[in-house]
Image 1 (cartoon, rainbow, N blue to C red):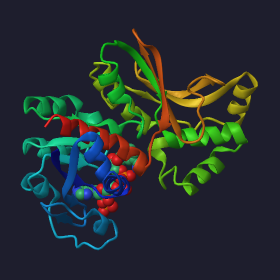
Image 2 (tube, rainbow, N blue to C red):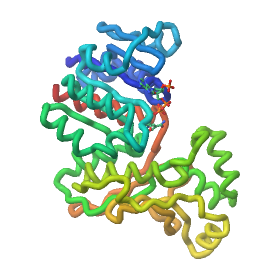
Image 3 (cartoon, protein in one colour):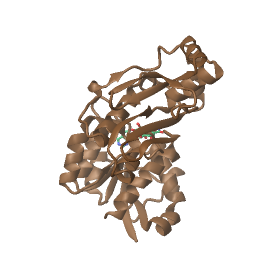
Length: 326
Ligand SMILES: NC(=O)c1ccc[n+]([C@@H]2O[C@H](COP(=O)([O-])OP(=O)(O)OC[C@H]3O[C@@H](n4cnc5c(N)ncnc54)[C@H](OP(=O)(O)O)[C@@H]3O)[C@@H](O)[C@H]2O)c1
């Protein structure tokens, strides 16, 4: 059985969700994936916990381990490990601090798995070239659409297909708001309030409702799956702030609903009329992605686009992929 050692960087929602999944799936992974995933260090802004025999994740989650003083970059460079799992929030202008973490991991010959969109959207080419030159993997399934395995499905399972376009709903917060507006007749502010109460929207939802989050994911899909070389500046971005209850009422009257759609070929994020019953007509905070392929035709993927446990599914898939190739 392969024993893969991991450094987790960022122990917020996703880091803790991953720790819970690692605990829950320990014996399952040994039995079914032939892999043992051992966390040798966890870094937070406030400190780090290091144990080369394996950090006790249960105690860590229960707040029973002491965080030592550190510099995250030193831990990434100095602690012996196979993989760095980078789970910090990324600044969309600079990609930091994740960009430095990923570079440091690759420079110290560690594979990388990340859920962090910004570094991948900003520096996809440089980072993948660096990883490739060093014979390392840089995997980022969790950075787009949470639990939905869009990158792995298209790059591995549909390898023989040429994909001409990918489009869909890549942001759960805006889908929740638009669904509430169309299904329950709520206005934007009331729907946003409900999204915040249920934890589907952050206290500052600007990046979601202005379409920025969807656009970053679009850039990742374009560069990693459609062979493009684009940046955020190439994407035309319009959020949902101008979608009024009147627009939605009129759409419904004519058999449509309104969804925030990211269209990779068009390099565009915008509210679109979607026929009621269309594969993109999904409710709540779901994401839905359509890929147009030559052999398989149109493939639809629908599922949870966020959430700590849901996103840990994507991170685990990438970790197992690395483990199987070590
Ligand atoms: N939440 C989701 O459902 C979801 C889904 C898919 C992808 N993602 C992405 O996954 C990443 C993590 O999301 P999240 O929801 O877990 O965010 P979060 O709850 O804010 O957690 C991020 C953690 O990273 C820590 N951190 C920040 N800078 C650091 C540094 N230099 N060294 C070590 N730790 C550092 C933060 O510490 P402080 O709290 O002290 O700042 C925080 O604990 C983000 O890039 C997000 O976009 C999230």
